Amino acid sequence: MSAFLDKKLEKLVPYTPGEQPHGIEGLIKLNTNENPFPPSPMVIEAVNRTVSSLNLYSDPACVRAVEAIAAFYGVRKENVFVSNGSDETLSFIFHGLCENGAAFPDITYGFYKVFADMFGVRKTVVPLDDDFNIQIDDYKDIKSTVVIANPNAPTGICLPLSEIERLLNQDLNRLVVVDEAYIDFGGESAVKLIDEYKNLLVVQTFSKSRSLAGGRIGFAVADAEIIADLNRMKYAFNPYNVNALSIAAAEAAMKDTAYFETCRSTVIKNREYIAKKLRELGFTVLDSKANFVFAGRNKKVSAADYFEKLRRNNILVRYFPEGRSADFVRISVGAMEQMEKLYEVTKTILGEM
Image (cartoon, rainbow, N blue to C red; front, side):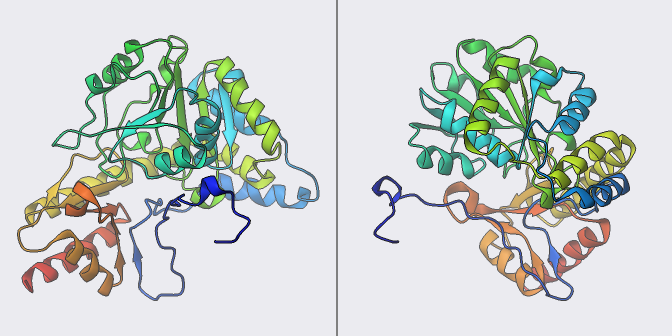
């Protein structure tokens, strides 16, 4: 590091994104939870129409995207915030809405810890139980802002809405952030609770169920005063945080509900297929409601060896080598032909052991 880096950041450990290799023939990329299907045709048309206006700044209020999101969820425009990916929303939350610290599970999205360290936020790390579940009662005496991913990552386990309500009711003066990056693949969104609970902030993304990971579009839904807080930070940092192409893409993606439903249901079907097949081969596969499965504890092959052997067969999955996660790999759900190939390669790997 240079002599100019602020001393408070010397021990900062950055988030490690999944590999993004290019130019490898026959590669099956199942390591970053991307949607295997392209964006909606309506999205492509909207982006093409917008290209000619790139000489102008994008709309800082992201009105078209905000209105489409509000219409989809049946909320008011004042309840919606749009960002450059959901990670930007999360960064604003850790920077400005965690005065009393932040609490989150020990096994969850890795950026929570990074953002806490980046912004000097006191962390309370709450262990999942032995079955990788979030236990709501473990949070009842915590005064910090609570941040949970639901479904959780990398486990895919999803809390029912009743448990989210229990968490909210523990302390109505404590903010609860529900990161719903994967909610469309089998969970029930907490967005419907925002009118009842002023202490709820729901974060979502277009990266997963709407096939726009490269578009970098996220959003939040909450009480209007919380949304105003997020906009205050945004306008103090980068008013033009979402580019014009992404705003157009977000609007179109929200409006094309038929394409969304088709892709979403196909991913769910493919997830159930590969989970069943891996269980038949002796893997423990957690009950995922996300677009990935968390599989491991096979008597014939360790998670680390399975990860490496898949890699040698041009199949990339994600491996987290620390703690309890070291017993599992996370496998993104791809197209059916990719899932069938993963299954066949896995049978071959186990047959060689």
